[in-house]
Length: 111
Image (cartoon, rainbow, N blue to C red):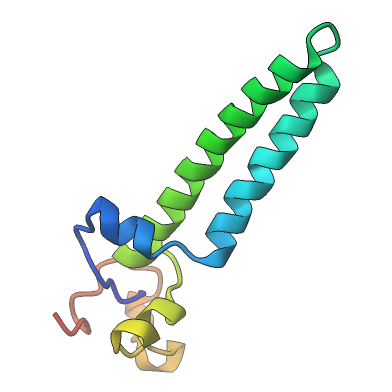
């Protein structure tokens, strides 16, 4: 159980919560896709590189958006976000063993 910070985040909150890792992943997927498109598109290398880079940017943006949303909603570890918003991130000793792996964390949320 990870504390949820915002169970219904807006688009602005999700984009504002993106970490450097999310942005790096987005840029890395874009770059790798563009290089692959240029390498694989022999007769028309540059247009294929641009097309693949665009598709890679879209895929990277969707993954970064999903990761940021999952951290805000408490479905992924979010210790950094908890400290930023003043919530305590529970240790495994503080969570009863019957609740390990359960995503319903309303029993210890500060909402």
